[in-house]
Image (cartoon, rainbow, N blue to C red; front, side, top):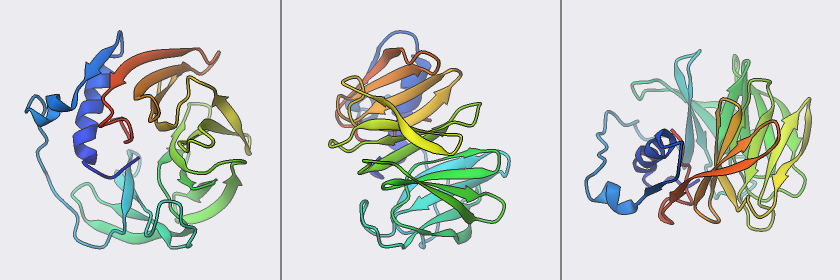
Length: 232
């Protein structure tokens, strides 16, 4: 996931999700040419350090922002999570600390799960304390995270060397999906009983059935968007 034109990419992603049935082609010119527009509502004050992703917590009515605070693969121990209000106020700049280069995140039952290069981090939402660090064997660039209704946690490794989707189930991390259909997987989202995956490698948005792992292509995305988080 890249931070470049994040809101711009989200507009395109929403169109892709709405066109779930069939294949919908989204072009960069649709946005640049004025078909879709983005209107700024607010912006935070200075303080965030290389913010990579934002997660909305409906139960707490707050935003969690992952701060890399360095390079995307640098293990410097300076990465952190911020809490931001819905009007853009930074409520707690360093709400959770001790990470390296945190990126995507997801919540399940008061636990915030954050990808951190080659580990999945579990954080207590109530106090911002790290509860556990789950190593992902072979991981080079863990990116986005999603959770299903059963509490399973999915996380992508978008590195070309590994290119897989992991699953954290009952406290154990393992490879859940790999192969030619999974090409540098990036963004994730759960829609019902399907896991939506944005491939950076081939620019395709795919849906994976959680029960039998059947894969369906639901959208083609221009290369200009393929390397970014592409979900609403």
